[in-house]
Amino acid sequence: MHYEGNIIRPPSEANSILLQVTVGCSHNKCTFCGTYRGERFKIKSDDIINQDIEFAAHHCQRQRRLFLCDGDALILPPKRLTAILSAIRQKLPWVTRVGAYANAKAIKMKTAAELARLQSLGLGILYLGLESGDDVTLKVIRKGVTSQTMIAMARKVADAGIKLSVTVLLGVAGPKRSTIHAQKTGGVLTAMDPNYVGALSLMPIPGTPLYKAHQNGEFDLLPPTGLLTELREILFNTHLSKGLFHANHASNYLPIKARLPKDKEAVLAQIDGALAGEVALKPEFLRAL
Image (cartoon, rainbow, N blue to C red; front, side, top):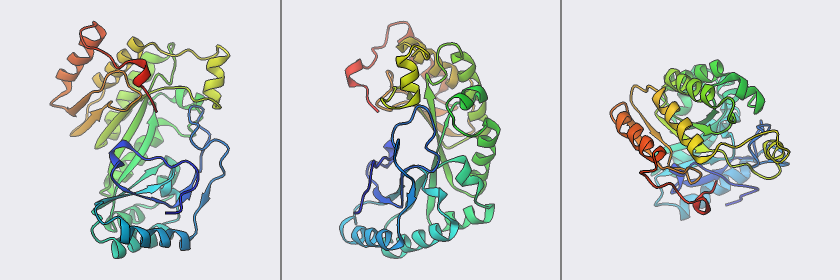
């Protein structure tokens, strides 16, 4: 495989074939993200992509899923994505699902018919970073999109028959807007009604604007209890018709997993137990991005 730069993928794609079709992120302005800092976005050539698909055809016959890297592979023009998905279907017929990261801009650039076509060719899930449902926070972290646009793009994905996994970021609003961030995030998640929600905890990354703000005393981090309170508030305000809400990422102090709506009360009680000191939290040295 011809990998370039940092290769990242969602935890749920740990056993997937990783096919890199872009390098970096087309937005690359979020204050908290250092994954592609200083890296120029580019789309890889058809020749390299096809070589990697051929490699997978010979060496990745046990994997049933494939993930398109990097940060927002859906930004590729529909014609290019159609060709890539068609080649995957032809050369890797055992692959049952293709996934990719997506941002709101990439989804907006695709028509409903184009998304439906991609779904018919095997695109089964998209991973979208909401981070916060609070428009003030979204502006501060330079997400480049409003919560209402996020909701509209989530519905567009669902209408195309593609599953959606949404990530939110605990602590990203700081202590002063923590409650507002949590309540509004729960409200936006409810309106989006994704198949999966993943909550991560903010860990400042050296070299990012947010890290610099923290070092300069301009941004305060939430303590573990503050992050747990925020997690509880988001979950309390999230009402999914049928979805999985989890916070089992390595950055979190308390791994939780709730099938909504049936597990909601039990998991809220679990968080309450942790806040009361009755449930042990993950030691700091075990936390990671």
